Length: 392
Image (cartoon, rainbow, N blue to C red; front, top):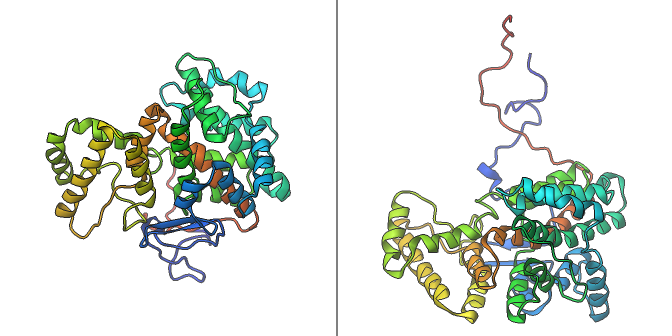
């Protein structure tokens, strides 16, 4: 006979029908930030995320997400020193990375990060969130966030037959990331462009990866487990896996005279145009607006071509899909900016992860304060239950 745990809509305490994909469903409360899709606006705590990206450092925003307020000069210096000291890999993790890089050579650094971060958490003795106090949780979160850029760049370089570059305590977060990636101290303009991108992607509401991290945190699992689950969600091409694909679209079009024909063919075939449309925004994505400005500050043929493709794509989408109000999303110009700053395409989504890990961790810490496990229901639609098991 069926058990008492079921999805019978007539039973006491029956589940409530919600939109497919939980779209628009409020599942908890947060003080970390919000996305207002109809307004084209999002914020971290009480501050505009785009304004933070334009005026503050990555360390400032990281501090804000952890402590709930922007730092003063002394707090900024102390926090920067504390997090810089956490960048170096433990010897046992560093020694294991060549094998991880070989095993994930076909999948790339983001796949390797899942394994490497699990190892780093175990090596550091991360314990279940349920069993530790808020101070230890925060310490684990800072350690994990500081290690992620080091792990990613080391895996990338090892995958190309190069030795990892040790982090430098004297460089800010974004500049150090580029230094570990290339082995050369970055041009200040490019370091600042990447920093602004990183700040703009720290957090963005209850997206799939953030929600995944919070679901795992609600079980009381350790912090590394929460982050590894979030990385898995981010890797999907419908989530964080799109920046390089948006740039691949520009490559596929090839030249200005092919723009309209290529786009019309894809739209009429029902294909998705990577870099366009967003599940929340009904206006231009504010991150894209900022990144477009950064791209234009560099200038060049790639930027001019991307702007032209954006203009024609929005016009063609409006013509062929009236009422849909489709605009570019963050991935479109994010790919352009990262290309201009010298990041290889297989590091686009990992770079996204290097920023979003701060937002995931802040969400994990917030979720850990709530002892209620996240446990939704599903409506059973298979054959009627209770059928006798046939004899073998």
